[in-house]
Image (cartoon, rainbow, N blue to C red; front, side, top):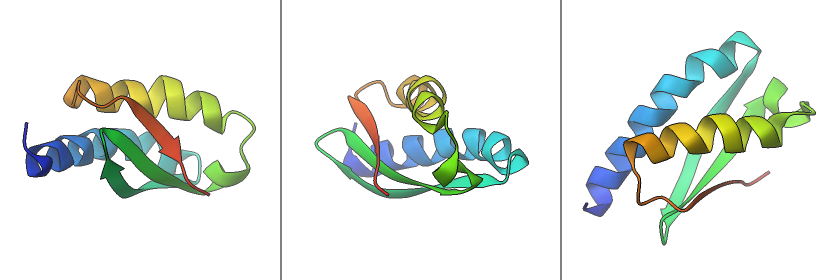
Length: 78
């Protein structure tokens, strides 16, 4: 998969996730993809949420890996 295809796959995954985050007053922004690690920034209500690490790993990372299985990890950069 090319870098552009990976980017498109990750963006599709984030588009699937965003409505759930927005319904709780949050959002997510893609910062970069480096060495199959996706760097994101949780925004809004997500920044202070006590379960944001669980959301990041179980929701965001799992969905991104469904679209782009080569992704190793998703990291929140605050």
